Image (cartoon, rainbow, N blue to C red; front, side, top):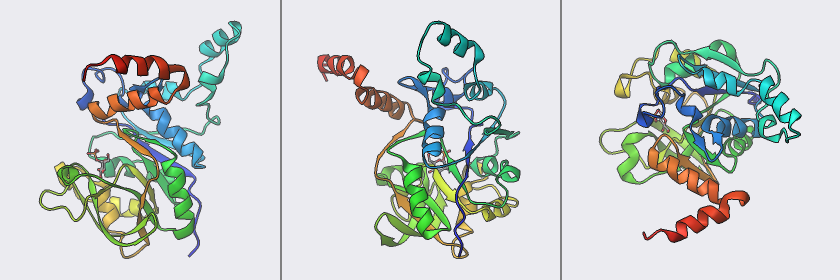
Amino acid sequence: MTIKPVRKAVFPVAGLGTRFLPATKAMPKEMLTVVDKPLIQYAVEEALEAGIEQIIFVTGRGKGALEDHFDVSYELEATMKARGKSMAAIDGIRQKPGSPVYVRQQEPLGLGHAVWCAREIVGDEPFAVLLPDELMVGGFLRQMVEAYNRVGGNVIGALEVPDSETDKYGIISPGKVDGRLTEVRALVEKPKGKAPSNLMIPGRYILQPEVMRVLDNQAPGAGGEIQLTDAMAKLIGDQPFHGFTFDGQRYDCGDKAGWLTANIALGLAREDLRAPVRDFIATLDL
Ligand code: G1P
């Protein structure tokens, strides 16, 4: 089996963000900031750090701010230069011209459908999927790529959650465990009854292109949506399939409490912000 390198990453960013209204009424939820960076930038930086060369956004109506964010802003650059200010703040996200690609998901039919919308750009090679709601500190995709380069096939993130939360996520039915890799025997999206385990899929995937052929005909599943989890489940047995547990920190920023926690944690991790944030927390009578 030859293991082809992972060069492309798909970012499904068409979601409406109803959980964050009114903040997301006129602004994409992926532009919500944690400290001073939008969520989408954390995910793109994670992908670039993992060696990804092509960024593919599956976007939708009202998401123009995302395109502007990854474009060169001449006004901003000229102003910063004229004021003798450092370019570091805006250079961090500069992409090779033509590298980010935008495709539209015309209808909100689910995550599986969003990923399928990128099929022509992904072509016949393995690809990553990153859900930017899930903020990972510590290089999750890089660790997954390293594992993938050893075992090939499909490698998806795996993370333990309390039993009470398994109905919110895609859940792995685990087989043999080898270090941080767990064989995936089956997958179920948002299980209603008893879950096969408490290993959930935290929005990081390295997939073989065959999943697109499954998605060509994937029927709606949980919540009436076309689920990526259901399509991936059909590859098990035909291709190697592993879960990979992350050595790092995850913040579920699709949730207000998770997003607030991320702001505090990442604020405290910043040298320029640590003292005032810590001092404020110390004054709280909790
Ligand atoms: C999606 C996936 C689910 C995954 C989750 C991670 O669900 O369908 O398998 O566990 O993201 O956040 P959603 O949060 O879009 O309902």
